[in-house]
Image 1 (cartoon, rainbow, N blue to C red):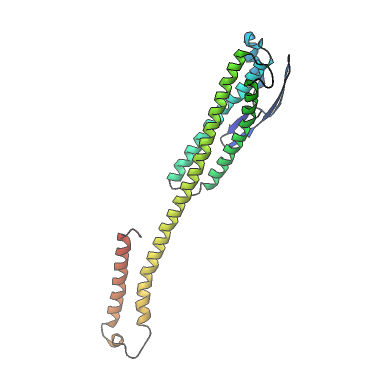
Image 2: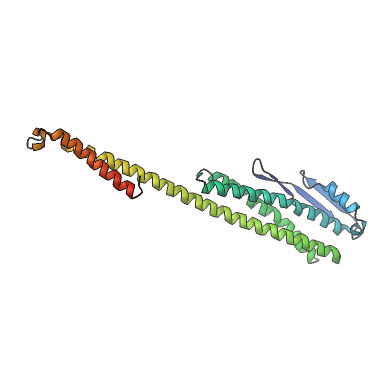
Length: 240
């Protein structure tokens, strides 16, 4: 089984591992990692002798129930970070793609971590591994319901993150299109006076304007007029 806890400062799910050996009159657990606190599970069982008398499967239920309860804060932490990412995306921050990808990876790993627990619960409820007391079976169904709820929320998180990534890419594309529009508009505005200056800079013999007294102010006025007309036109169409 894989217990988990969420490290909010680095947005990472930390997994442990616990192996449980179950016999007719004994339960042996081997834990790797800090979670879950098996000592608290033992204290809880010792405080309820009636449940403890139901056999090793009651102890197994208590351990699995604690693991699933610890999944709750992890799911809440992931949900909180997803909401933060949504706010960043719609707030105009285009540099969240990496954060979305990393959080998606944590969700996928968490989904994989819940699979062994679902399989163990399925075997126990079907009576394939050991004979389970009816009361303990009812408790195990409750744990199974919680596991299914966690997996459903994780599936929703994964789909939501994919949608957020798609929206982010779309918004980045739209932003780039707006920038291209502005660059193109300014290029056209600057090209107009350049074209006029180029025409009158060719120095052909038969260009009446070159010998006209008002030729120079006329050329400047023409450049300014074309630039202003283009600017107003682009601005009206939302390119500026």
